[in-house]
Amino acid sequence: MSAILKFIREHHILAVIEQAIAKKKTRLSLNAFEITEIPTLLYGCKELEHLYLHLNKISTVPVEITQLYKLTTLTLDYNNIETLPAEIGNLKNLVNLNISYNPLKVLIPEIGELENLEAFWCNKIGIQELPKEIGKLSKLDSFGARGNELKTIPEEMTRLSKLRWLTLENNQIESLPNCMDEMVALVHCNIRRNRLKEIPESLLKCADMMFLQLNNNQIASLPDNFSTSCMISLEMIDLRDNPICDLPHLEHPFVRYTEELPTIPDLESESSSSRGLMGGTQVAQLAVNGVGLLPPPLPPPRHPDLILEMDLDGSSSESTDDWENSVNSSELDVQYQSDEERADNEIAQFFQAVGMVLPELSRYASTAS
Image: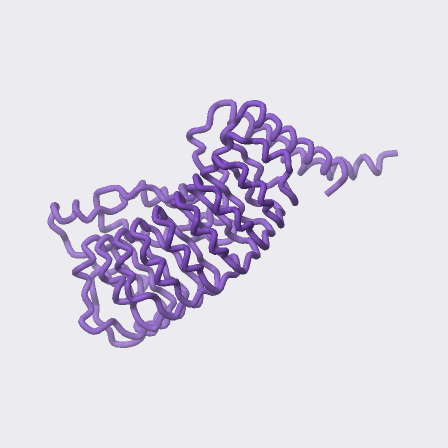
C-alpha cells in the first residue's frame, strides 16, 4: 500500500470512529479497510450495538473490546486472528458472532459465557474439537462449524433445545452423540462431506427436521427398521455420493440417492399445512439473507416442487453453496439503517474507490516530467 493511500485510509477510519462517538451511533462498519490493529479510539464508542470488522487483517483482539458492553452483533470473520481474549465472555448482550476464517485452532471455553448468543459461525478456523461449554448457549438458534477438523461434537451440545440450524459440513466426523434428538427444535442439519458410516438414528427422531443432508459420507446402508414416521416435518434426507447409492437399497419417498429428486407423496391439506415448508420466495431468500447471521424464520405452507432448492445455502465468495459464511455480514440489519447511516456507508465506499484508483494516479505522477 502506498504511503499516500495508507495515510488517507487511516485518517478516514479515525474520522469515522470519531463521528460514531460524537453522534453516539449504535452501528459501525469498518470492514474491508485493511485494518491490522483495532484502533484504540474505537473503545470510546460506548453506544455501539453492531460492529463489523470482517475482511481486514486483524491479528489480535484486545481485551478492551469488552468495554463495548452493548454489542449485540460482532463480525470478525476473514481476518488473521490467532487467539480470542477469555474476557470475550463478558459481552453478555452479544446475539450474533462470526469468527469464521481465522487461524484460531482452538475455540476457548469462555464462548459458553455468551448467554444471549443466537447465531454463532466458526467456519474454517482449524479447530479439532468444540468445547463442552458450548452446551451452555441455551438461546443458540444457528451454529456453523464447517471446514474444520471435528471428529464429533460434545454430548453437552445436544442440550441446545432452541437450535434450528446446524452446519457441520466438511469435517472429519465419524460419529455423533446418540442423543441428537434432544435438539428438539432442529430443522436443518448439514453433515455433508464427513466420515459417517451410518445414519445417526437419534436424528431420525427429530420431529421438526426438514432437511437432513448426509451426502458425501461413507454410509452403506439404512438402519434396521428404518422409519421417518417421527419426522413429521421432513422434506428430504440427502444420501447422494454415499456407498449405499451403488448398492441395493430401499427406495423411500423422502430419501434422495441420485440427482433425480424423490417422488413426494400427496399429503392431505391439513397435514401439509401442519408440516410447514419454506415457500419459493423464502427459500430463494436464503442466498440473499446469507449475508446475515440468522436465517429467516420458517414460513408456511409446504410445496413439494421447492425441494429443488434444498442445496441453495450459499453466497460465499469462496463457495457458491455456503450462505452460512456471512461474508457480507456488514449488510446485517441494513433495512434498519437511517438515511444518515446509509450516507456514511456511501462515504466509506467512496474512500475505498479512491484507494483503488490512487496507485494508478501515483504511477502517472511519478513518471511525469
